[in-house]
Image (cartoon, rainbow, N blue to C red; front, top):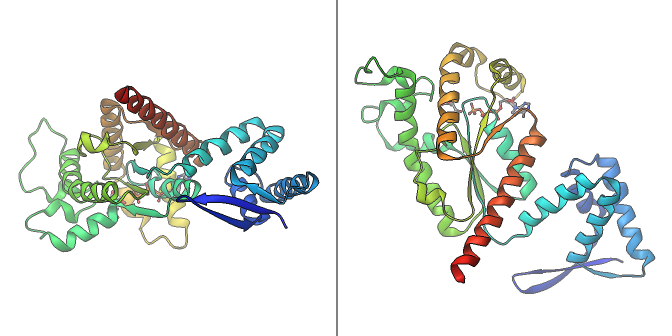
Length: 306
Ligand SMILES: Nc1ncnc2c1ncn2[C@@H]1O[C@H](COP(=O)(O)OP(=O)(O)OP(=O)(O)O)[C@@H](O)[C@H]1O
Ligand SMILES: O=C(O)[C@@H](CO)OP(=O)(O)O
């Protein structure tokens, strides 16, 4: 039997080679399930042919990369990229913002899955907890949606300001308090987490917190309004969806205003804005950014030590 030898926290362990586990990780690199299983079998056979019975996990990764290189060099590059992040012992705190319906929850689920991150949280959940703590009288916009918050503003909006955005900023400002708490706690505990939602807006979260190593922020966008609108249709077709399509279509103009505002702020603060057209491309871009930032952090750390 072929055994894989790994190390966790300085302790060595051995486990039987599993074609199922390996093919699952190949599927994450966009290889079709059938082909992934065939490749996993080929890799197992190649070790048997070499009469190897115990393989250090590093060796296994090398062989997978070599096999993928022959299959398609781009796949090998993708596999290396996300494997590097997964194997890193540093925690990752990933914040994904964007207007309602842009795809923050779908992308956060896919990214967490790909990187093996087990903690996920939506800012809508943070908002829901805050609604139980703060009264409606004290903080009326908190009880609205981000795009309807203006309806509960207690003071009239000055004519030079856009009312929708005034309400939006007030709403985001409040939820950012809870969001900051979650980010601080995640850093303190050293856990990896993906947090997503409309309340992740550059400029509302303390810059020092965002500059903490391993904290990465992204904003999703859709410049084509029609594609954005179609996302509400596709969401309401999902059986589990409980959010009425009519509400989002009625407020679509306001949702677009929040979209443009979030993107504008991201550009102002140098936060990557990713057009969320294709799930795979979005995830790949995020992984590339995380790797680049990690490299930069390493270089800065090295310079500071010198
Ligand atoms: N890249 C994509 N390509 C195609 N469809 C997508 C993509 N990303 C998300 N979707 C679909 O768009 C719809 C809206 O996505 P999702 O629910 O993730 O948005 P959201 O930003 O979390 O919205 P909200 O903030 O209102 O909860 C869903 O049906 C989802 O499956
Ligand atoms: O406030 C919002 O923009 C959305 C975010 O998901 O929430 P809801 O439409 O459920 O109020």
